[in-house]
Image 1 (cartoon, rainbow, N blue to C red):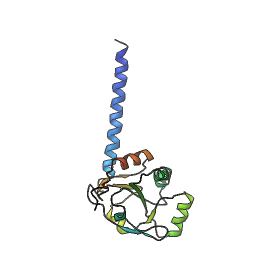
Image 2: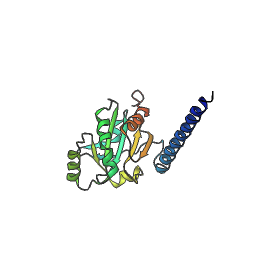
Image 3: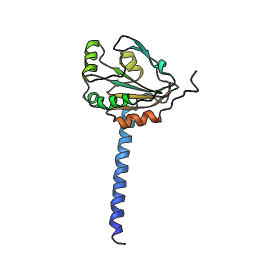
Image 4: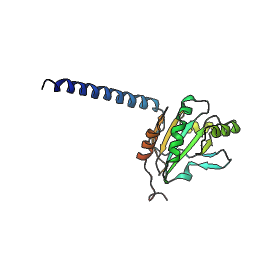
Length: 179
């Protein structure tokens, strides 16, 4: 019986430490996204992609959408690129990734960045209005949009492929209810 007591003490200690870490992560995330849009309709936008085509959020109605705001100069954004590449290659038919670049003044530089980093998902040229509408103040910022066009959640900072895939998984698609 005495030998079990140290094991239970260790397990209780680990559980307490885990609860502390989870609490810190949730608290920091809530603080970082405190000014973001909540569970409300996502602002629609019409932006040009790198090929010059117009793309809008409303074109993806009925699908789960990850809107990824990034900047080519952002080190954390660059560190996240392998996760985004992997996620984009494994999206289901009802899931979409739309990346919106902040520094879109030099389109050729953004095209070069996309080529150098082998980015095959849609990259849209962001505008100040779009960044303001989504209350983006730091990069990377992700919004997860339900199939009905409402915002499910948002994150700021480095996200893993698993984290993004999980958030897309819990985001709802509304195939039947979309007109």
